[in-house]
Picture 1 (tube, rainbow over the protein chains, first blue to last red):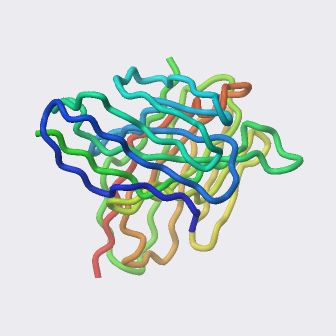
Picture 2 (tube, rainbow over the protein chains, first blue to last red):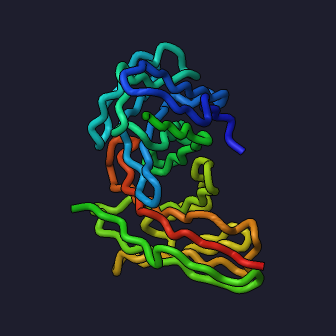
Length: 118
Length: 114
């Protein structure tokens, strides 16, 4: 079981609220990711980070923002939540194993946060 | 366009039976292919990873195969158990891609009945 945690696990809020989804990992991984997943659909990368003070947008456009002030912490923030933000948000981390190509990194996923915006 | 297609979309089998899940991809240039298991309400967990030179990889009752020529992979589950009920996701990475640039299939939802 990977040591990567997400809180809250479930969140129901009203439109216009500001929310922060927390993600922490205790494995010392330098790379972290946020994915969005709707039921029965594929995961879509929305943000990633290669290390402290490094953040990039992913393939799927998202109104959320992220920060990486500490290696172990990669929170995602929505300034003003809307019903279209309703989804499952998955955080992941990875680190290249010594002697292997960087493309073979295995990503370890957290349990996810299921967000519902009313 | 880089895509990953999985079939069937869903599958129901009886406990103890075997099954095979399929994954076809158009990702190029190919680097590696992973199979993940995702339990309901949980994050995906890696089962196997195969690079271009590998054509089979086992992890307990799970055996993945890869045909890089036809761009197909399969995941075979032997002697299924109730705990195998989950979504199985095929993930393909292209060579030299920025980390995190993975291509995900929509998954096959497997249900094992007693």
